[in-house]
Image (cartoon, rainbow, N blue to C red):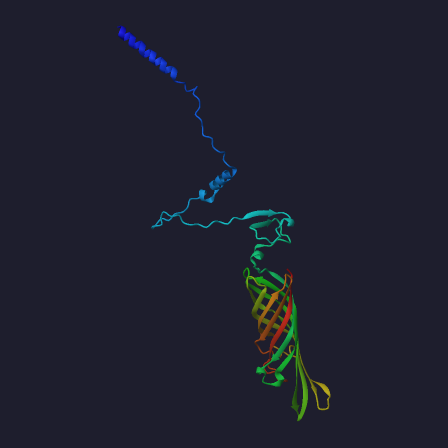
Length: 322
């Protein structure tokens, strides 16, 4: 009994001593923490850039066949452009430096250009205006075999035109109305009644022409090439022959109204080839060659005409409305 009671007391005493050596968790001193250096601002920006980079938003595409299935497919980095609205001409970049800025203006200004100008392209636009030509006309027939069937002289024309684009940059239809006048003549000698006489024959022609032309150019050029046909309607045609005999006396040998007497064909057809350049928005310069296809005078026997047809070489200026 005493031994049993003594053992219980001994165990209680040992437990009390051990409880005094243990410190409560609430009263325990915190463990020392290793001191670390504060994060730098630059490191934060680097981390943010990595998180916002394009690689972290989109996964790399990978091959699905073959030995390279585990390797990522290389992709090109996209170019970045900055769009900046411009509200005054003073804000437009004029230093000439290479920049990646695209300026967007609310309204066109003297310092702004459109995309066609930026790419060096010159578009075709509908326009109309006035034009005039001056040059030489050659009225000849039978391949110039005879001296008396070659007539040359001054020719001029004036009228209006319209340019109708058929595509954006390269092709347009050009037509118009031209009032033309030509006076051609020839001098030669001929024997009449065993006497030689000097003759001077001349044609004075008025006509209305309607050029129907296809105008071609390159996308980056203001130089154009024209080709087409031109019908011409005879308005007036006076034929005169003056002679000078051996005594030096002049007289009118022959005078005919070719249109009124119905010796003149009412409609002439010509092939027209030309080229030109538009110098600026309002002015251009042209050169044309017209080749007549038909005989202008039918069934005329009072004077040798020998299948006369017209050829005209001319230069001119064009004035565009816009």
